[in-house]
Image (cartoon, rainbow, N blue to C red):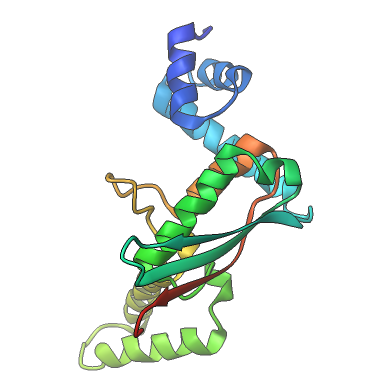
Length: 199
């Protein structure tokens, strides 16, 4: 099935993918917009995986300052070329990430950054909370791992839900992956810091 121009444009607006990629995705998914968007997302993730080994030495450091001057955030986001670092899409991503850091105060960029000692301490706390429950060990372990996922979603920037997404479905890592697929470059959130007066 060939995709009509209107559907191609709808998919483009939704995903930011190129015209030919949208046509291919719509053809592969028989014109289903949701399936086509998922197809593009998977393709973007596959392409991003290929770029993992490439170095991201360019990028920008961005500062977000709340209007009252009492809250701010700094973030460093890297890409492969100075050209991409200057694009509107990349800069918009970095601005959004800095605002996210100011709003949600994550402690880490990614779950891989959480020290093993911190994870073990969290597990101990969760096990302690359930000490009086008469459940099999494997059930308790699953509950602990579920609580750990919630910890990651709160404390790791890439695992958080994007504050501008009212539906609450878009994670920060999805935003980074989208910019990655649009630019064709490896995008890396390097580090972050949040500052609050008296905090």
